[in-house]
Length: 235
Ligand code: 3PY
Ligand code: MG
Image (cartoon, rainbow, N blue to C red; front, side):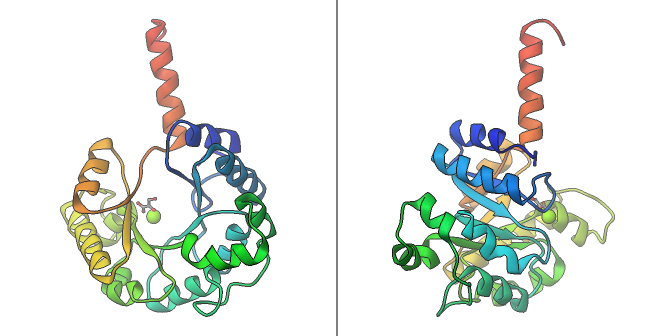
């Protein structure tokens, strides 16, 4: 969430297989995302960009900068999912427009070699975090070019309680998350989920989720500073 590509890089270097640059709720702009994507590539960690709500046409731009996956929040219908896949995938799957010069440089590939692997190696991930999305889950999963779905438990908890409570661990939210991972498996796609605690990560893994987003840079940095100060008797 922080605006620093350097912090993203250090998180990638510390062992995260992938790091998501959050352009929905975070502080990065396009220029910082560009630096963060390059820094993560250098660090050997997969750069993912979460886009703003409805920013579907920019999916190709983030991929052109070298993002290896794009996450679209608030995908509510198969129509949304198709628009997203169209922006993220080259023909014949979609209508991604050509221009991945930076992405090809970062991948060390000639243009046609980048093209040959782009549709399979760059991922379009649709967030499921509303009631309409749950209602259309199977249709969203059936859209060609959508590689996987990603559960947003905070927004889901708001939606399922009609705004009464933010509780990513509410029984309704957990039940919906379980439904999502099962539906994804059935459709031959993968499921991911945002996790609030290490326990959430382990539970999600056990359920069959394969992309667990855990650890917000603002929190990781603040927690590390507290540990350092505590160790010096300065808390
Ligand atoms: C949510 O929980 O709603 C999210 O979008 C997590 O990133
Ligand atoms: Mg959300």
